[in-house]
Amino acid sequence: MEGNSRNGNGVVKNGNGVNGISNGASIKRNGVRHISEREGVRLMNPHIQDMEEDVLYHLALGSGSHDLQQMFGDVKYVCMGGTPQRMKSFAEYMLGQLGYLLPTGTCLLDISARSHRYAMYKVGPVLSISHGMGIPSAGILLHEVIKLMYHAGVKDPIFFRIGTCGGIGLPPGTVVVTEEAVDGRVRPYLDTIILGKVVSRKSKLDLGLAKNLVATGLENDQFQTVLGKTISTDDFYEGQGRLDGAICEYKESDKMAYLQEVASKGVTNMEMEALVFAALTHLAGIRSAVVCVTLLDRLKGDQVTTPKEELTAWQTRPMETVGRFIMSELSVAEKDASMPAIRKLARVSSNLFSQSQSCFEDA
Image 1 (tube, rainbow, N blue to C red):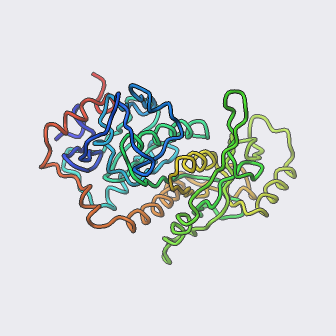
Image 2: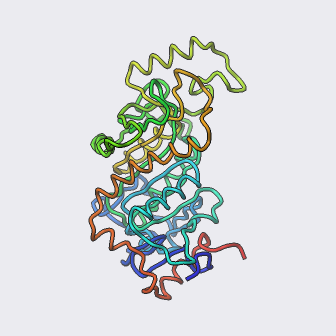
């Protein structure tokens, strides 16, 4: 099977696999799946049940146009990060960790390429997706991925955010696992304006999961893995107290006083997505964790001046941390169940993916 052919997502199989399909019948009414909260991911939206079809617009998928349970029903881990390239790299990394060997001429393809928004790759039970930059972009993706898990009937998935950040009092290259996501006022709440009113939602991560991730650190690691609070801001420049934006109406002493104050409250890093990630996964009842690598110490500067090659190497560290955890959780049977079986490829499986506008190139 050609990896760039029109009828598939790189590797497709009649079962579970890489960018693959899982067996099972979908329970649907009017094209929308109905499941109980105990069976799978819960949605805090009763309107979904009454829709003829749920179009996951930014993923180029839909509950009526695709058999989402067959395509994604075997997912156990959803890993998100800012850029398409980073998440493609993570998918390729997990391909090696899981021991999957793609036949000559095949490759991983972006399931959501036709959306022109986010990139999505599937490697057995692992979904690797880019969420863009900032709370708005990550929030849109989270809404649709949580609904994707619901329609696919996925039970107890674990969500990870894999990213970069600015450290506060930590050397560059340190891996920070977030124990609590907070806003710029060090409040563990996501404020969203809904119908003209501010709605505050608790941002809560799974602390036990975070501690387990820190515990995956090895003695021979050339980096430190720590637990700490993470500030999520709405802006890269003024929101994070930088002095190098186009506009800056505060002094360096103001910046340093703020950073030292939040550090005294247990904040170890700053980024732009953990708050919405924690709030929405918590509402959906999904275990989640945030793992980021520091690119600089904000107490010593604002600009990232490390050579690109070194930055790229640092960005693999959160991937290694999450990858170790996933491999420690998966049983041999679960790994084998998701292993690609190209020789068993059936035409029905191929046709399933050919229905997806996200699975082939423009004619």
